[in-house]
Image 1: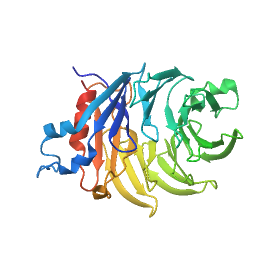
Image 2 (image 1 turned 90 degrees about the vertical axis):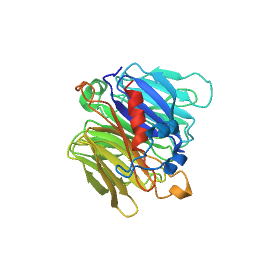
Image 3 (image 1 turned 180 degrees about the horizontal axis):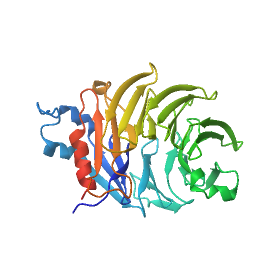
Length: 346
């Protein structure tokens, strides 16, 4: 039976062996991916895709499935890959330990659930809950910090000032927030003060720190994704997304950055050379992007970018769900993502 739902968010585990997805119907799923065996699959001479999708289906398997109350807006693995965090639009937050029978931890915060991020050591979790952004202690669930872009408590209730995206710096001492007031801000978690404010011409939807913490990338509805030097705030690079950019992500090694646009575009850049490595066009809105690590020396030149797309919530149910990947070098994942799409449609 087909459901009128689409995949909203997708992310690889740090070692590339798992893929987590969240969809508009509130389903959170974890798949096992045998990425080290993908390149051995024969390809069709006509399409260049794996010739035996049925055999390829064995290389990706659904391992876990959970239900949130509303649309799962973002999923993220902890840095060591043992925890999976998810946030849904009703403000629901969940933490699942993947390799043990420990119960899932769930709680709610704020007026909505729009984004989340782990600290590099996995000890803190930041969430964007509309009127406020929070930082939580992962072990205890205790609130450590909260931030708002509003000048007063009354103003914080206005959706025009809501925080949509969060990121924690590599040293764990700073929180970046992206908000609908057209700014991205960086906060010091020790002094609890705002450090820097970066301005776009429209709501900012996403933020991410580079691996060394010297660069922040932002995605905005002003039609751009940008790289900013920290702490100076100097703009280093700008990618164009005519319909606006809702998602940004760095590769695990920090050498590449990807941004996704509402009109279906994905740009991937090399930070070392400031070169554009790929420009991918998808027929629907891109709502998540994740750059996987290279699994082996033989695959050292491969970077797979998986991104979820589909009509926004409330759109026509006539369009089928979409989950697509583009792979560079020897590994092809198109058929694998077709398997994921079929799973989310049944």
